[in-house]
Image 1 (tube, rainbow, N blue to C red):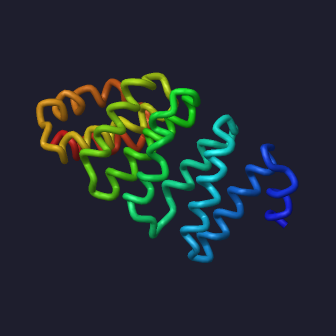
Image 2 (cartoon, rainbow, N blue to C red; image 1 turned 45 degrees about the vertical axis):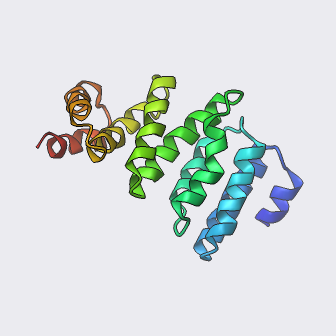
Length: 169
């Protein structure tokens, strides 16, 4: 049914929701590549969709996708000045997935760019902790120390506040 909805209503929020559902089903069936492809097509075709944040979040959570593949697919969006929402999400999630994949330099570059270009974005606070962790992993200790000292004044999210004692140690 979701296939029919996605085909019948492309370019609509309902069609976008159907694509998200189809990608989730593919992921549950352990067809990660197909799930990734569906979401990437949605993100490419609908950079202004209100469901873009959900599509990126789901894309970043797909298991069994090598980071280099993720990066190659998402990287063009990190430079797309014509679609700032898509660009911000691409930078943020590239940083998050890179950090989780053990690529601290790529994580740091993406999160640096995200924080510089989108300081008021709703995900900015969520980016602070992985950015600080990437600074530590890259052995940029002076900058990491500054970031750690600034975290308490910027931290409103419980996940950031809970991590502060571990970083300060």
